[in-house]
Length: 106
Figure 1 (cartoon, one colour):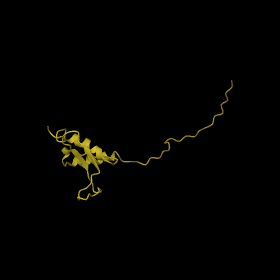
Figure 2 (cartoon, helix red, strand yellow):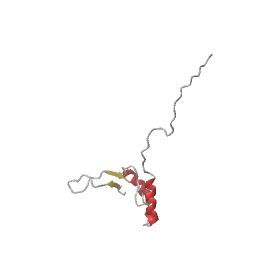
Figure 3 (spheres, rainbow, N blue to C red):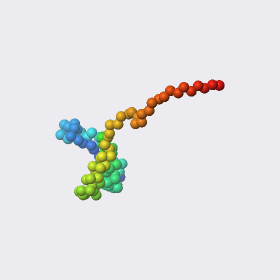
Figure 4 (cartoon, rainbow, N blue to C red):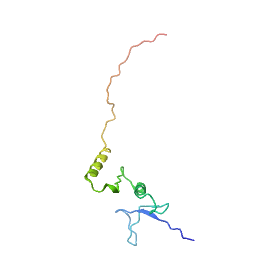
């Protein structure tokens, strides 16, 4: 019978704790449900990256973008869509509330 092997993906950054053997202690580790080599490639990698991201935005660069100038322009335009504006919470239209002197008689 074949022995089960487990494959994990680890997140290691510059702020990880150093272990006594000199290796970095991973921040996160995730077990792959199946063989990572068999799959959809790029889309699997992007879905896998979502688990580890911890910012407000995530930029995924297509491997087919090469280094075309037009692709660089797209990235700055896309990031401009996420620009935050300081908008006051006050209503745009101003109006005066007028009191009415309507008398109702029954």
